[in-house]
Image (cartoon, rainbow, N blue to C red):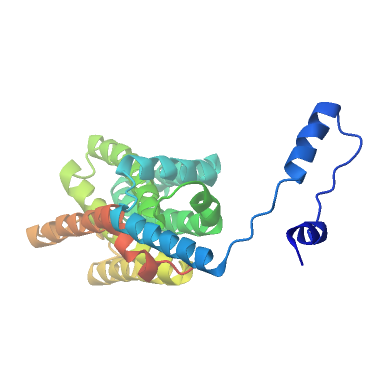
Length: 280
């Protein structure tokens, strides 16, 4: 078969007749151009060159590094996804407790309500936020190259800051009422809050919300029950404030450990993502 017969058997491009004259001439020009027929040797050379280029690109490419500011910006969008009611419920819960507690329990027992309520509120808020984060995580991953563990830690730090701010206001009010010393009361609830939240976050990411509630809220409820059993509850002398300097130091150490866990997950969460994320 000669070259003329081979060109006759080659498929011809379909050119509609309704094209404008200038566009029709251009289409006919491209239609009569010979179709390249690469040889096996040429294809092999092209693949070898592409493989060399790919290897060079991999060697010279640097891994993508997302700044902490970008992670916080993504966490801000997650905060907006939680909605205003998430924050209003926490405020109303604390306000309602401190409005009813003095009239029902008395002023000194309001201190116990603050110590019991703040860590539990923070744990439940964090677990709800992580659950909402896991439901929307793929939408955020598709739009920005951030790490989910670091984003979750940034979101949790914002929630902890919000709860701590509310607790600071309540602690100031109780201090002005002469029901407790400011520093002692602050360390008493801040220590378990940071520690239990720091433990609950990786548990919630890895095993889900129910184990996080049990591991985060269970020990705190047990410690409160032991404190009530050890003291004379019937006489009304139960106090969850530290009775010794050692207990106060343990509260401060708990706050330091919990804050270190949260910062560690925020700064080094990328290396632990495949171990912590249950929805990968």
